[in-house]
Image 1 (cartoon, one colour):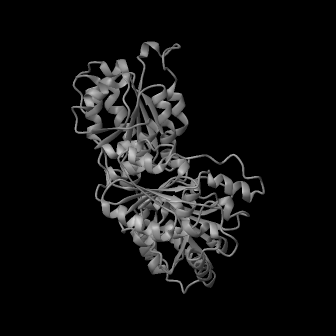
Image 2 (tube, helix red, strand yellow; image 1 turned 90 degrees about the vertical axis):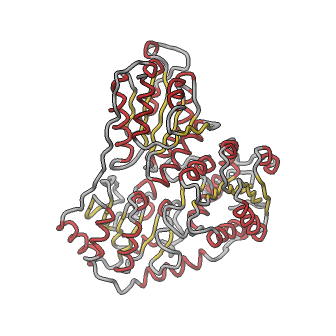
Image 3 (cartoon, rainbow, N blue to C red; image 1 turned 135 degrees about the vertical axis):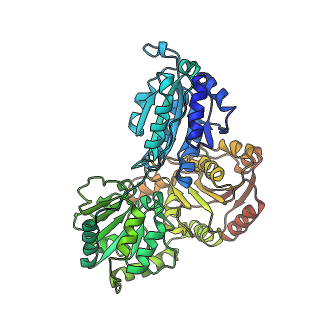
Amino acid sequence: MKASDLFVRCLEAEGVEYIFGIPGEENIDLMDSLSRSSIEFVVTRHEQGAAFMADAYGRVTGKPGVCLATLGPGATNLMTGVANAHLDRVPLVALTGQAELTRLHKESHQNVDTIQLFHGITKYNQPVVSAATIPEIIRKAFHLTTAGSPGAVHIQLPEDVAKEEVQERRPLPTAVQSMQLPDDQALLDAARLIENAARPVILAGNGVIRAQAWEALRALIDHTKLPMTNTFMAKGLLPFDHPQNLFTVGGTPYPPGLRPLHEADLVIAVGFDLVEYDPATWNEDSSRRVLYLHTIPAEVDVHFPIQLELVGNLPEMLRTLAGMVSPRSGSSAHDAIRARRLEELQSIPSPEETLPRQVMWHLSERLPKETIVISDVGLHKVWVSRWYQPKAPNRTLIYNGLAAMGGSLPGAIGAKLANPTDPVVVVSGDGGFLMNAQELETARRLNLAFTVIVFNDKRYSLIGKKQKAAGLAVTSIAFDNPDLRLFSQSFGVDHRKVDTAKGFAQALDEALESKRLNVIEVVLDREPF
């Protein structure tokens, strides 16, 4: 058996459905083995796009997304998407080719030390130097990418190892991972901490999504009447009209009076990762105590003073606590914050926000419950995070760790392949869109139907907003765009151009009903900040 055949057999045993990437000379044997497998290889137009596709696939399924590149420039192009997944704790397996072992010790064509390059952005980073070790390496990689705190892993397969003949070997069996419940005393201590707090508030994070603990959290909130706020990556945990919903926090804080965590004396951090919202922003003086409930141990931070840490099976932990904590009569402070935040969400405080807010309202109102919304990175990410209101959890993908631009369009391809019957909508700026717009061809070739909304303001608006807020000159953020109608149509993609809320509503309805690949260009005729 050829080593590359064994490699692919092990991938099949791990349940891999898709691999996204671009082949190269150094992995032609692996590609040949893949051509005879059950795995579909999706040829992309850039390796970065391939990694973003694998990232989104991992987010919506909870299973590792897999991407592939050759050595040298292929591997380095992959890195941004791999790091994006890793910092957001998404399971992802990156596969790269490499030169034959006999030339790795010296200067040679396209040879860079990709193991060293991937070191800081992966949980496991392993070259295959002997074909006999392939089953162990692949099993370990797929175990570690989802175990504990999920993240990216990297396997490098040199070209000469891929060609080796190896004795018949079988993939190693996969194992079911189980998590235990904290002991009874720890749960009792947590219940007492909540009972004794005057103004507790739940801060729900991405870990709730990863653990699929949203139903258990909702049951705890419905029983105890504890108020909840969520991070960008945990949107949709409570309905918009739920009385305990204090809406989203993250990024630049709201003005005083609209900050739920500042009114708390106990923050119940449920599935919260520090990368989502810097505690220095909401606990400047470290006066607010923290009860930490998660599947993984907490990061240490002076502004995150944990009084009690419970690590284990998060859904069961929440269900148990629901039976131990008495219902509360309500908190006037948090009720007042909800009323003020609701008023702010439904208002238009400045003319430049008119169209962006109306677009987010239309999306909230018109998109079906099962729609997956993927935000790119830029000022529009703030709009999606604050103003868009999903109807279900794990339906809004927001890059918040590395927060790389350009991930939304390729991410839509990964999400659509993972959930073919669910509508997918991308919200992007013109900057991020054109970073990986070539993947429109990939989506068109795969005959995928989804909608890409592009805010066209010809500037990197988030940077301009930061410059303006700092009292600095707004400079070095402007650029020109191609004619997005001609650009989209050149890929065989439908295009609609709007500059009013009414026009957007009509364009959105037409795009969703068309069951085709669509670009909706939203022209902003003034600085959106």
